[in-house]
Length: 469
Ligand SMILES: Cc1cc2nc3c(=O)[nH]c(=O)nc-3n(C[C@H](O)[C@H](O)[C@H](O)COP(=O)(O)OP(=O)(O)OC[C@H]3O[C@@H](n4cnc5c(N)ncnc54)[C@H](O)[C@@H]3O)c2cc1C
Image (cartoon, rainbow, N blue to C red; front, side, top):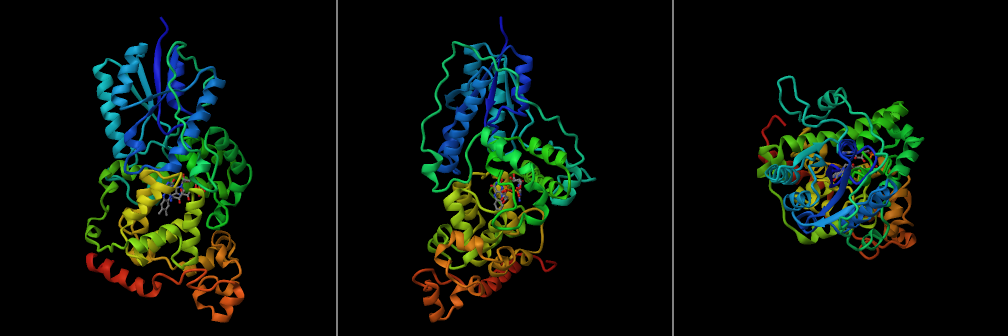
């Protein structure tokens, strides 16, 4: 009788460099590529219309890709710890392969699945694939988890790498099994006016080829330019439409300064995965206990002005509107809007994390939480909090000197002369008329005064932080 295994896809929606799919196809005669629609994720705390649409479209592409290999995707609904043993029983599957993950939710789910499979006498086979290296391994010389990026990177880059795998030559699936259905849902284009990218493995591979073929060379110098300079690959990496390990290897093969800087940046992703794996409480609490008593304000109007990109600070508004329109935001803008939320508006970083989870196509608990705690100065990789109070005007001058990013995303400011673009509220009434931008009518006056709020932040952080800072 033909031997059978299940490959349980989660956020690794690809056929290339997929260790779980690859091993299952090597060891078993037949495989069942399976996706389980889990209501806890679809309707949970971090549910997101755009990301669900991205996922459903990526599933369709995966189904087509598997069909090219002679197989298809099977879909079920329910709790994985119930669905998997049941399907294994129905099909005689002897093993379930999947790509391991690091979030507390994923770990608890995978433990429950392993236990249920064990009881059913089915082998559980967690595999690598979501990160460049094994993020559970790095330790300090004293055997502790790493909490500062540079030492982490020194260890991570030396860790052994698995080879990048091709797609399996063929995927043989059982012929008589009900395939289930990928549900119809709103398309990504219905969720976002200008989606950042096209979901799925095919477009992800095309974009990777294009990036490695040239633009990566300028990454070191250009990654902070708000109008370009980065790979734009994050949503595909987050959903596993391309494997980070392959992205890393392709950049290493390209070589040169730009590719080196890019590989280092990609290691931040492994770093935050390591951090969340080692400190799962971070998902709810500040990593540094002293900041758990920090005072936050609650102000629905200010929060909304931030979410909708109408704070009166051009760079903050441009970033937040890019997010609303495309489901993506440049990293530099993410840092500026993050600093603005926590240190100008004094709103809890968890509000920002939640909004990003709702809106970002690349939102991923480890990365989102790690970066929000970084910008709120409450997390690992510490720097004194006053170094991470970003001045939105200076940031704009430095990283969007010609105002291209601002004018694109905040069209009300298109006619404002360059010298007034960082602080449009300083235009005289005549200048406002001439620019076609009356402050308070066409574009909001600043909702807060950065210089004043900076001092408030200093006082609040100082109040809970020992003097050595
Ligand atoms: C407040 C805040 C929240 C963020 N939330 C997320 C998130 O939920 N998911 C996410 O993938 N990134 C997050 N980032 C990190 C970063 O902004 C994005 O990864 C990056 O903007 C994606 O664009 P890119 O693919 O063009 O990046 P590139 O510069 O081309 O980088 C290549 C890849 O490296 C990884 N990467 C780069 N920078 C970081 C970083 N700082 N932390 C972790 N991984 C990184 C990403 O996978 C990215 O695709 C956040 C940053 C901030 C400041």
